[in-house]
Length: 430
Image (tube, rainbow, N blue to C red; front, top):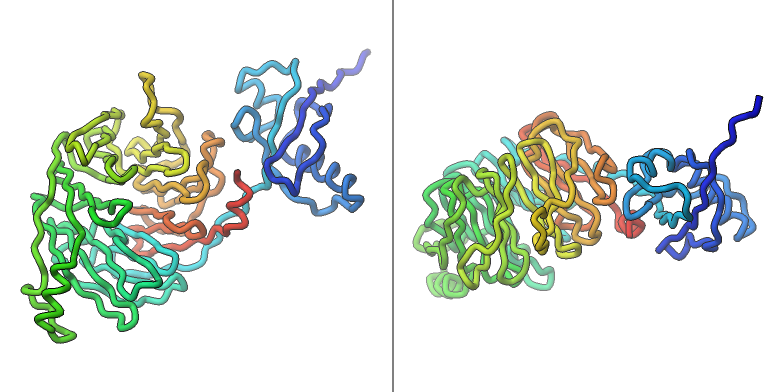
């Protein structure tokens, strides 16, 4: 009886990481080969070309037609409906290292808002305070000022060459407050009280210039504000209040520059795309794009369930949106086609409460969910996340990836978790 013959295919390997390049000569491999075997093959070729041992070589991931090969090559071909009667160009990249847990910063109540900078972390808590932390996990200052739980925070200006940083906090008390922090003395002063919303200020985003900010609210309105504190600072210098003074006379009340309506339910998230365009997500099952200079809505992107968060990538120019149906969806806001949803990422078992793109790698983003898990995704691997980060003991309320090597998540377990993701690892992902 004739033995079954193993089916082989021809492949050409290539990589953008020059230190791992091999000749692009076509090779014959079994069609049922997996990632581990392909990785061993690349290491063997590298070892032969360098005349060294291949033991303990580099682990690689492989992409065919822009998608990671997560199963055997034969299964991947079947799922992609690709004929095996051709020579395949397979890209290989160094396998990503897992994010590493670094710190857990305890709060007195739910951590519902976070944003990092190169040196510091700003958090908002349901105990009506904001907190400033060092990246090492040291609590620098706790900031009272709101009369109800915080819902959002955002850095306005932070430059290590300047002595003062500024940031904004938004709250259930219907206000957004603008603060100045003098780092040398660790003094924090509230300069502006932005009033105009008729319900909770649930989200905030600062323009690229730092001169304006947008807020979204449970009242369904999108509002534009000026962040200029020059006149307030001059007034405070003239009055020379005492260091501990918190007089309301030193806080300027500010009204919005612009109010835009269109959403039919609460606005859950807002983000600037560029110096004049803004995207919002809402409980009304839609994403909307706005031109703030023209003061009008330009695009409506419908969904099937409430959107709880949205993030825009300056690198890929794509949107990811978190939904109450447990999915994350990838949108191309530039698309002129009827369907702008490019992909859905399904792995969470609870509402997806937060999403944020990597600031340095166009394919990577993170998500957080009511299932208590944050996940690292690659848009080239839509069927499975790269890694699960399981530290929270309750639902995740916010995530942040503003700093390339720091992934942050805050939750209803009163914890802010910090994961490090080194620049060296990120460099392998292109």
